[in-house]
Length: 258
Image (cartoon, rainbow, N blue to C red; front, side, top):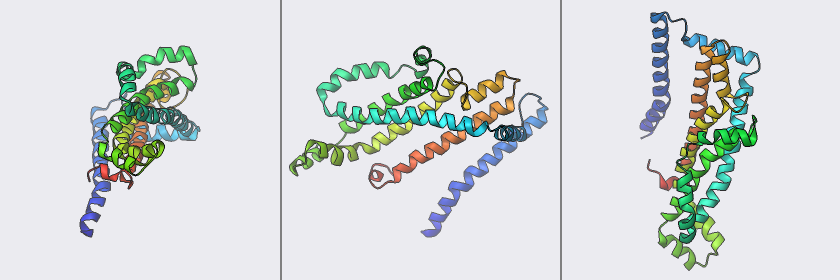
């Protein structure tokens, strides 16, 4: 059993690393065989990223992107989860509010970009607002569905033990709905990270999205374009892995299959 566990843990590391190495080798071979002067090689991308780091721009751009993403996303979590739980607990309120939510939810967050620029100008507030819009509706819907799918026997048992409404929500409904809420949080973050990059191409003058569009326009630095894309992907993967790690918490592990 221990050997099987060790083998599985090794595969989690070795297989992705091997896949990445193969893709880099194919990338390098394609650039050198075609003798292209436009698309950068892996070494060109690494050197471009090192240049950014030496100019003290790399960490500032990464920090700005993470700050905007965290602010908009956390605001959506703080507002979306309680609101979704509150709506899900009341059938009357759900009938009133749900049509509005379902009407606004399909609207692309990028469609709000002209209004965001008008309201907030070229500032951090514009992309933060877009990230909030992208995140809040999936979170509200996930919380609503989580409460709606809680077995009624859980609620009845809590009431039989004399739990007041507030403790019924915090000790029964929220833990039971948490696995579905966590899925909504992951989906919301994926959308928010995509919107951040698009918003930074228009509404601000820093961040990884800005790096891509600025490198394209200022001298066609495709090494920085590709480098920015890879950093966006790598950071997104790391943050998604962090969110997935919450599924192993004892309070929600029962809701996920191994």
